[in-house]
Image 1 (tube, rainbow, N blue to C red):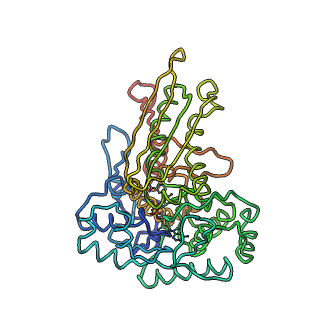
Image 2: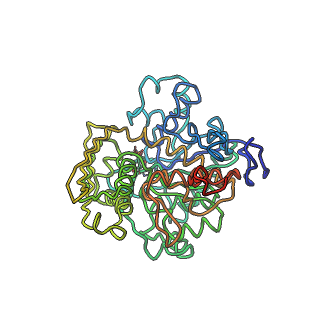
Image 3: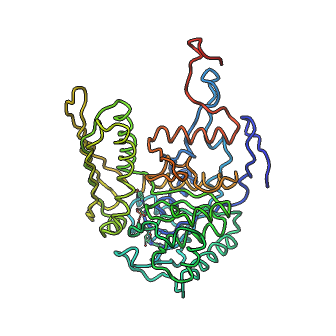
Amino acid sequence: MEQKLNNNSGNLKNIKIPQGKLGILTPGMGAVATTLYAGVEAIKLGLAKPIGSYTQMGKLRLGKRSEKRYKKVKDLVPLASLDQIVFGGWDLFPENAYEAATKAKVLDQQLLQNQSIKESLSKISPMSAVFDNSYVKNLNGPNVKKYKNKMEAAELLRQDIKDFIKKNNLDRAVMVWCASTEVYNPIKPVHSSLESFEEGLRNNDPDISPSQIYTYAAIKERVPYVNGSPNVSVEIPAIQELAKEMRVPISGSDFKTGQTLMKTIVAPGLRHRLLGVAGWYSTNILGNRDGEVLDDPGSFRSKEVSKTGVLEDILSKEDYPELYGDLYHLVKINYYPPKGDNKEGWDNIDIFGWLGAPMQIKINFLCRDSILAAPVALDLALFSDLAMRADMHGIQEWLSFYLKAPMVGPGLRAENDLSIQLLKLENTLRFFTNEEIINHLGLVHYGVAEE
Ligand SMILES: NC(=O)c1ccc[n+]([C@@H]2O[C@H](COP(=O)([O-])OP(=O)(O)OC[C@H]3O[C@@H](n4cnc5c(N)ncnc54)[C@H](O)[C@@H]3O)[C@@H](O)[C@H]2O)c1
């Protein structure tokens, strides 16, 4: 139903109202996915607060500062409510979401034992996965589909989506990739157009990865797709062509959570103050299944690409050769089982200031990986659904705020500064609601600009 809503804040653009239920489908039902499912249940029950979620807690200013108008994001734009969400997913391990969450050991056991949470998670059993061990070397599981070729695999996934929507009486769905990081698979000729990609699906082309098959299936079903990993999936021209053709929003890649989140907070500050950076050494230890997968050099290479690009982009050699021309940037991830999901990251940053004097910054972040990722996954799902209802399609740059390697239009440079990414997100929400775009100029007080 297309209609303008009265949100007590001016008119909305033509956005369909979020009627009925929204399915959030996650390929992968591991640590991130089950922390998301359980968290939403706990919040609905009033047992926890949605900390870290901008859609649930964020506020933004509207109009001039003098108007003193602030509004919660969820009161400004028509987002699906948590009560309208139904979760589902695929995994190569057959455990239901309660069993998988227990294994992942992210959540407090007391919370997981809550009768209502336990019951709703136990009802979510994974659909069988499209999986290929040559893309994730350190995993093997029994709950996998059999198919003659990759086009048939895509058709099986499309049928899963249709069945899930029908069975749960959903109005619509979004897909958020929460499965493992695949081996690095840069763009090849088969990815260059939709025609060559579909030909490749039929011919079982080895360069087409499982995540690309899920992406294709989602978009063919007009289900918006978010890539929470560094896999090359929404990045390929064939998928972007399909997203445009089907008028479906896509975004990626890789949830911006621990160390990279810190980088996109600290590095822009150093750049804005014109402080030089000679070196940035980052290392992590983590012991969850994600860490085990990343122990394989092929999967680590995917992560390395998404993690290193951020800094090189913010501390640009081209813009400031004298400050960043010799930047030495190194990222390591080590699998260390005793840590579980409690990742520990260290950053040693060698900087230099006035007259070239050297200084150092050390960051030791003892984070909870999936605790940081769950609200990011929730926001990306809800905003992708909003984008779909607003008829936005193709790459959603305004969601860069959440992503380590944000996608942008062809030939454009990605914006990696977290505060500029937030400004872009806020201004997009203002745009949706016909509110004034805020540029923070504020010269009216000096008599040189008009209100
Ligand atoms: N936790 C974070 O903070 C964070 C941050 C950024 C990105 N990520 C990415 O999110 C993803 C999920 O992380 P996690 O910690 O939940 O990992 P996890 O290992 O706990 O869960 C991933 C699940 O995906 C399943 N899987 C693998 N390939 C699959 C396929 N083809 N189809 C269906 N299921 C498949 C695995 O069996 C596993 O259960 C990873 O790619 C990770 O790199 C996580």
